[in-house]
Length: 180
Image 1 (tube, one colour):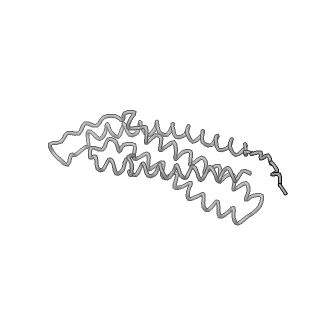
Image 2 (cartoon, helix red, strand yellow; image 1 turned 30 degrees about the vertical axis):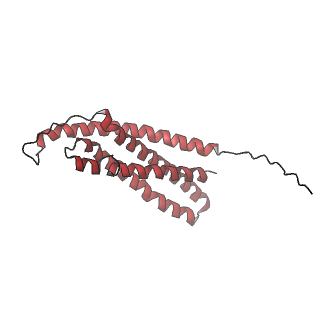
Image 3 (cartoon, one colour; image 1 turned 60 degrees about the vertical axis):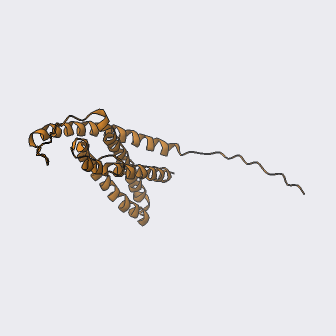
């Protein structure tokens, strides 16, 4: 006996509400990140100007002529701030969604998720402040120090940004699944 396979049509249904929420939160994160980056660049340039007066070289024969940050100096730090801000907004969205779910269900599981998300939110805010202080790293005259705390591969800034990228992926998936 020959069996004829039944063809099933599979309709892929996307959660449009979740996609809209994720995109909206990402846009808010990008805008906030751009604004904060501008503020941090101005602040870093002011610190660099003040450095010239207070700089004490390790080598008395070396000269230090700090220059304001250039575009190439601010691309990676600004991108890092934007990525962390997107993460913050996704965390805020998840916290709000879980608070709404908790108010409807009083589930202990949701309280656990809120206790999990709140420290991540605080960590992201601390990451913004850490990245803020790293804007000036390109003006540090000692290359080994600059590379270890800056945004190069393996530098502190680069590590924070990499962690935040993976955090955004996980939070986006969690937000998508939580709005079904």
